[in-house]
Amino acid sequence: MFNQVNEGGLNQILTRRLGMQGGASAPGVAPELFPVISLENDRPEWGYLKGERICGRNVTVAAVAGSFSFMQLYLPSTSTEIAVVTSIANTGSSSIGIARGVGIGGGVGGWIAQTVGTRDFRWNGERTSCLLERNSGAALPSLFPAFGLLTTTKLLYQEPIVITPGTSLILFGNALNTAIVAELAWRERPANPGELV
Image 1 (cartoon, rainbow, N blue to C red):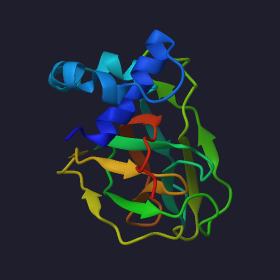
Image 2: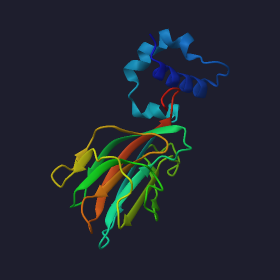
Image 3: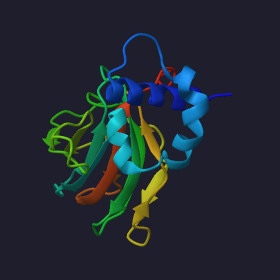
Image 4: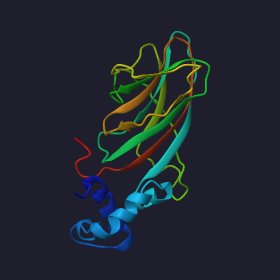
């Protein structure tokens, strides 16, 4: 049985590269193409054909007396894409908590945007769907329970984290008056049918 998610990606590639119009073309050509594509489908340079952007950014949130430092990688609720965080590195001297957030307006105002760059130079450097923002406030924003902690001895988190529209990945300091210094790497691409529930 042909995998529907791969079929959606194959349809996008064929439509874009061959200028095909009309109905979905993948089911007709899948038996011949799928074995070849499945062997090579992890090559990062092929992601461009499906509209995938490889992104990354170094984030620094300065310490503020009497406040927590935190940042969010937010995908707006109006987006039709998904983002997958591939790694988070703690490059500072303080522990960082990792949690799912409710996005902008989660109890804290004054977000300051940081520019985001793509790591695939075929894309315009600023063409990203995710918003990377930082803040220092008297209280943490609304968070789901933290699922990760990067201490000074555990510097790298490499489990995939999928961000869907209207949600955010939040990194936060575990103590008042501590800075956050981290590096994030993630991928963005259009969602296939059935991926956004």
